[in-house]
Structure formats: structure tokens, C-alpha cells
Amino acid sequence: MCFGCKLANNEVDTFSIFENELFNVILDLDPISDGHLLILPKEHCESISGLTNINELKDLITKIKCILMDKLNIENISICINEGKINDLNHMHVHIIPRAENDKLLYEETNAKEELVKIFNKLK
Image (cartoon, rainbow, N blue to C red):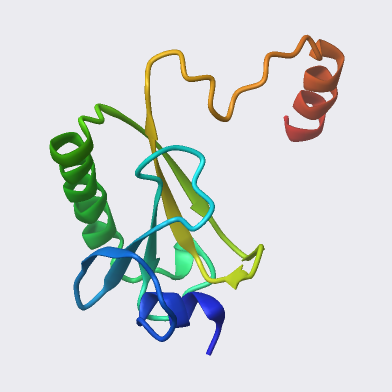
């Protein structure tokens, strides 16, 4: 069983704030903001394309945002979906990151237009 499955199924200690038969929502152990959460499917899944209950995930994200708004007075979130082997997890998971206006989290100003042009040309 992968480490993500162990987290999702309470086989290791976590700070679970919500759980149902499909998902477990836990506090990120290395948060980048207060209330930073992970949503982990209980069934092993390595990519979003392998997730069979995407509508339930969407509904859960909405529910979690409401919890954050109510309990921590959070109005804005960033959502990040990790696939493949990230850190110790080879298990698809969703980061819910509470945001504040002008917090500059996940943002570094750069003037790297040349790099953008290179990436753009590779992607088009």
C-alpha cells in the first residue's frame, strides 16, 4: 500500500478534518498557509484521469471551502492537483491552499520573457 493510501485510510497519524467513504481531508504537515489541506482519495489513484468520482471531488472542494470560510474566515483558495510521484506520495491528491489578498504565496515576480518565449515555442 502506498503512503498516500495509508494517509487516506488513517493507517498513519494525521490531522483529519473531514472524512467520508471516498476521501479523507487532512491538514498538510508542511503548510504554506494556515488551513492548508490535502484531499486524498481512499482508493489508490495516481492521476486525475484515473479518479472515478470526480463529481464527488468537486462537491467536496466546495464543502471544504465553506468550512474554511466559516472556521478560519478564508474567502479565497488556490487548488493544486498533484499527480505521479510527488515527495513521498505516488497518489493523486489535491491541495487546498487558503489565500489572502496580496499574500504573494506561490508567486515570484520575474522578467524572464526569453524563458517564456522558449516554453511557448515548445508548447505551441
